[in-house]
Image (cartoon, rainbow over all chains, first blue to last red; front, side):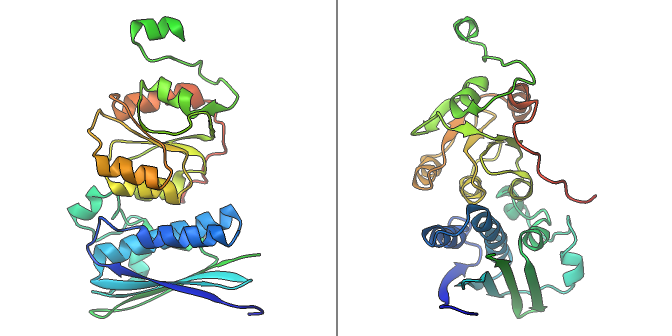
Length: 142
Length: 141
């Protein structure tokens, strides 16, 4: 890192489908104000939104933190929830444990984690059953 | 378009017609009602039709119009996150005021159509059939 780092954290409430997406929208607006390229902002926003929806759908609570440096935009999402017993399985497109309520919102089709990986230059996921899940996704600025 | 407008039928465009299309033309093609749209002159890049927002986040390109039978706040948020040009709510479903308010806040034009999703997609395919934008790269089977 060669310059100053911008950091902002957003709280995410589990099962709050009304407000789901507000954190990602806030991140997108912040990146717009910074003047970053629109294609980069879109990739970050989509990855953040998928992660936020996962947190709302599956976890009790989560925190999404935006880190911006001159080189990278990183989204760090940590939740308190059931965790993921088999990450490799969860990363497969189409695999889902979603409830009907989740599907009624247009999500829960097993596309979220693969889409995060598709939009991020780097993506790390770790999870502990009955504790929670952590995602770190990075998009390079240059 | 006056001939079709006089009969109440949806205006049609020749399949494969090239050139930029606007939100106004999209709305006309599906006999849409404007729920909120401050300016219907912007060009759109194409159309994505889906009820699954996860698919929209994969397949849609910036500037696309989303046609959907799903009515909830996540449709508007998905459109805003994915830089979509507008949303057409199909199937004649009632769109609650809070969704229109959110669309206004997020600057996402929204229209309603009595067409089924199939009909709306078909009419818009006639407009965009030649493809105004590169299709999204397909996911691996």
